[in-house]
Amino acid sequence: MRKIIIAGNWKMNKTFQETEEFLLELTDFLNEVELNNIEVTICPPALYLEMATDIAFESKFSIGSQNISVHEFGAFTGEISASMLKSMDVEYCIIGHSERRKYFNETNEMINTKLKILRRNKVIPIVCIGETLEEREMGVTKKIITHQLEEVFNDIEIDGNIVIAYEPIWAIGTGKTATPQQAQEIHKFIRKWLTDNYSERIAENLPVLYGGSAKPQNINDLLKQPDIDGGLIGGASLDIEKFSEMIDIAARN
Ligand code: PEP
Image 1 (cartoon, rainbow, N blue to C red):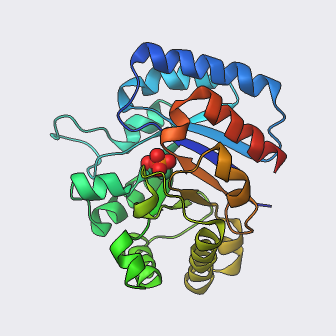
Image 2: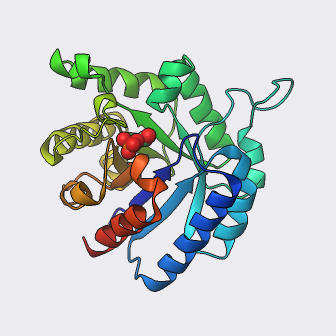
């Protein structure tokens, strides 16, 4: 049985004090819930990773980074490497997020390099893929997803420690969520691609998360879909009430 992952992507939000307060409240909340098969992870701004991993060490959630450098080490001022994340017990790292593709010109090739670096350093990648509204309306969603998968997973062996997040770009931060049926169709398609290109065992075990305006009101229906294994949650993960409610719903799903 695949685990369910509820991951919060905080983007460039929260101060140090707000982060600490949220994580302590999350710790208290998680002590009260039966998590069953659910893993909770928070991806705060990089500056707070050390404090966050310290709190997570005593708690029932893990910590992820929102990004890493395309380089492994060296003269790259301002960058953060995968080995740095590993040395701080950071478990996950988001790569390929549409905001990084759009605002920082990240390509599938760069994401493929990051994926390889994360694998070497044993940090679990959360690989984001998804189509724009224009691509969806043109009816080329599956073609775009296939292209992203082919380039991002080029020359990658999968041994289980990889997570994929399907994030339709038109649903990120817009309040527009893919319907559970729209999301399920693409999740199933991704799993089929994994079967065809790797194996049925890998396809069956690899968690595929949904991301795009997920919130307490829609998470239940999304999680009921057979190929949706959790959520990568932006806006709603900034609010402890909403995020806790989503965890609670997932735990009872
Ligand atoms: C995201 O940033 O990955 C995301 C899904 O954001 P939101 O939930 O705000 O749409």
